[in-house]
Amino acid sequence: MAFTAADIKTLRDATGAGLLDCKKALADTNGDVAAAEKLLKEKGLASMAKRTDRAAGEGRIVVKQDGNRIAIIEIVSETDFVANNADFIETAEKAAEVTLEKKASGVLEEHKALVEPLLVKFRENISVKRAEYIEVAAGSSASTYVHHDHKIGAVVVVKGSEDDKVKDFAHVCCLHLASNKPEYITKEEVPQSYIDDQTDIFKAQMAEDPAMAKKPDNVKEGILKGKISKALASICFMDQPYLDDEKITVAQAIANTAKASNANLSFEKVILYVLGK
Image (cartoon, rainbow, N blue to C red; front, side, top):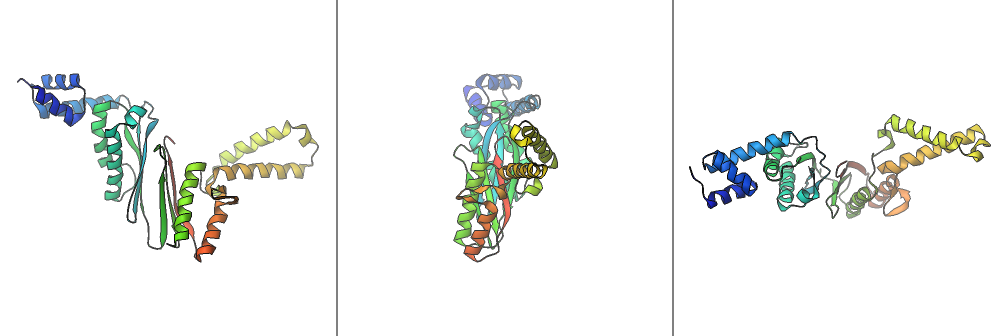
């Protein structure tokens, strides 16, 4: 069965596949456009299965909010060419909408279905890497932020008040997360292995310092504890210098905000997505 230029255009519009691929698919299916579309999809997915180990270090963070519902997702690709493509961006936006609609965290089957046409079109390792759904309860304040390059996104929910001061605080916390990129929320979350490694490093550094050899053991122990505490503070959100006032920590900032708004405040959600992390 012969096929026309119109059939090729229809197939390209439906799949985003290249001209030669569309022609070959139509030839292989005797001009059946529907069968050719299915064939292209199957070939694209089969080819993709061979590339899942290829690094997908580019992509996009998307945050969507609808009333008290928030979705944050990370969708990844191998190249920035694909990540900046209009179809990829549209798919990322739709994937966030799916998370909102389904009210579910995690990568869903609907996400995978959305990505399939991109696999056919670009033949890259493309996937929704992670997704989270947040529902903000009454009496809480939430804020979101996405950096202009769409490689960093943050969501902060503060429980205890809907006062404007608390909303402003939540917004600054989002900016703080994007700027400082803490690895943990509190010191209690830090693995003991990290603390042990840092202790060994600091001990080695101190042993090489001639001035340190003259100090009493209790002084050395105090210096070591101080170094470890400083290292932990640099990677823990609650202990980092607060973005709007670096003389205080985030923990002190929420206490000050609670006092100013006459409320009992706590962090309900602190989410930071950094592309590729």
